[in-house]
Amino acid sequence: MADRAMAVAAWEALFRAQVSIMRGLSSEFPTEVMSLNEYDVLFNITRAPGRRLRLKDLNRNVLISQPSVSRLVDRLAARGWVEKLDDPLDGRGTIVELTAKGFQEFRRAALHHMEAITDRVGSTLDDDELHQLIELCDRLREAQAPVTARRRGDAEADAAPADAS
Image (cartoon, rainbow, N blue to C red; front, side):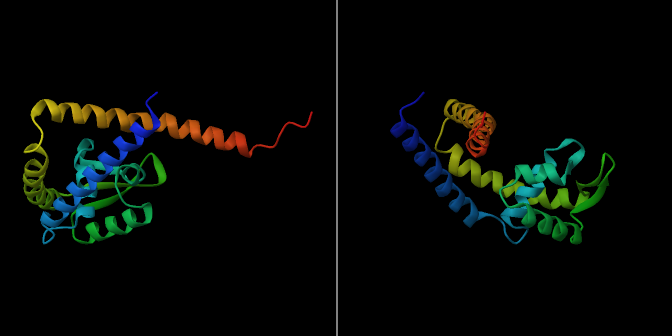
């Protein structure tokens, strides 16, 4: 296990780099097309098979809260960019499907956004460093589920009444 001070310093460096890059990307994002949150939702749907995603799964992958996602999807549906469908596997669930118009608008914003990302990230790191960054970030993300489960288990154990036998 890594040294605590080193882990905290690495987290702070990662967080500050992400905030700095996101501020720059946000300032250059083509908001006349869509908001960055709308882009995030459409981005996640475009990555799903058939450009369809259960609302429940969309909520797990976007950077905004569940109620905000639902309202945002409603706005995207009103613009004709997505369609909300009943989930045939879950009568209470909703599937969000990207329309051709929504994909066209997403692509328009994505081309501009990818250029800005390339300018801010790709011009700073070489290909080997980018591969390393991807691997490190993937490892960090994948490691979170077991840590969360372990911490929940600890919290549940702490909250459980002591055995009175």
